[in-house]
Amino acid sequence: MFLHFLHHMEHKIAFLDLANRVARADGFVNKKEKDHIRLFMDEMNISEADYQCQDHRDVKEIIGNLKDEQVKRIFFAEILLLVFADGDYNDDEKQLARKLQELFGLSEETYESFKNWVIRMDQLKIEGLKLILA
Image 1 (cartoon, rainbow, N blue to C red):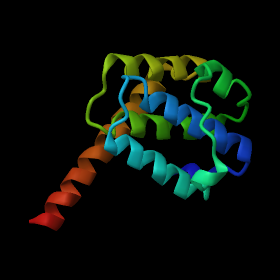
Image 2: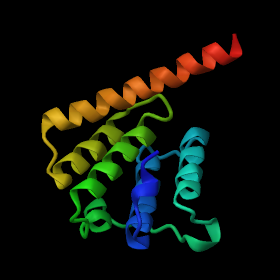
Image 3: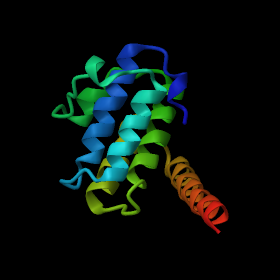
Image 4: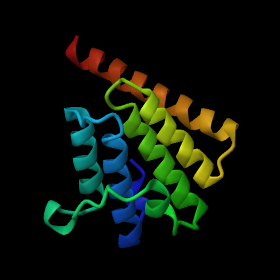
């Protein structure tokens, strides 16, 4: 959704590594999460041949070089969309989201605003599907 604003390959690769790490947080990557990661790659114009997953790195190592506040917020929004993609916001995913909040220096209010936005986005998708499939 917002990944097209990332212009540096370093940011794109870091985001994909983070997304893969988050998708595996609960020990299983489901179809919706895999689809989200493919969509992320498409949005950033990265082919599977151009990307070698480095999700074994610690989250802090993956995002440690991010300085731009807008890039941090893009990462956070997109990762929350991924976390909610499977409809299950489990403890491992919550812990990772909270770690990102801390590492990015986001307030509790900002965290809740992002989370509420993601939930509303999901509800709008469901509403749209119901309208289409009626």
